[in-house]
Image (cartoon, rainbow, N blue to C red; front, side, top):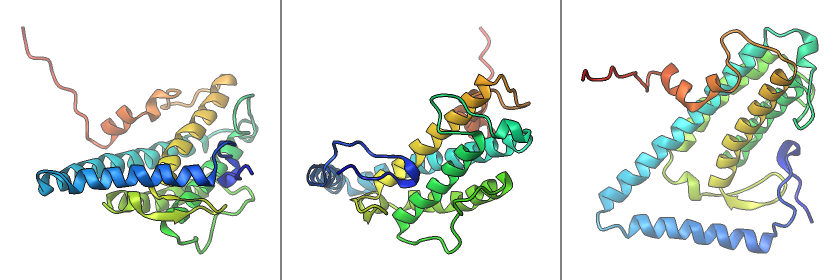
Length: 222
C-alpha cells in the first residue's frame, strides 16, 4: 500500500517496509562502525563535529531563505498571492502555508513532540508563517548539533520507522523544492520583487554573504 506523505507529499509507491528499514539500519551501522573504529577516536569525533556544523549551516540557510521569500511576498497584491502556474504545488499563498506546515510536522517527527499550537489547515497571514519559521529555526539547529540525532529511531506520523536523518534531510529538500515553486509562479507571471533576484538571492552563496561567512578577496597584484 502506498504510504501517504506528510502534508500531501507522497512517498515513492514501490518502497516497502521490509526493504526500507534493513537498508537504513545497515547504513547507520556502517557509519557508526567507521567512526568508532577510527585509528584516532578524537579524529572520529572531530569528523562528526565538522559534519554537524555543515548540517547546522544547511538548516540556517533553510530558515533564512524561507523567511526572506515570505517577507518578500508580503508586499504582493492579493491577486498575485492567489496566482499559480502548471507544474507547481498551487498558489503562492497555498505553497508557503504548505512549506511551513510541513516543516513544523517534520520537526515534530524528529523530536517526538507535537506542537501545542500547530499551524491550522486554514490559511493564515504571511506574517504568521514568517514568525513560525523563525521560531522553528533554532530548534532545527539544536537538533543538527546533536551527534546522536542522525541515527535516532523515529516513527513518522503515517507509521514509518526510520532514522531521524531521513525526515531531517526531507525537511531541507522539501523547503528548497517549494521555494522553487513560488519562484516559478513569480517568473511565469513576470512578477519582479525588488531586492530579490529570482532564484539566485536565495541560494547558499548569498546566505553565506548575508551572515558574514563569505568575504570577497582582492586579487593579489601581478
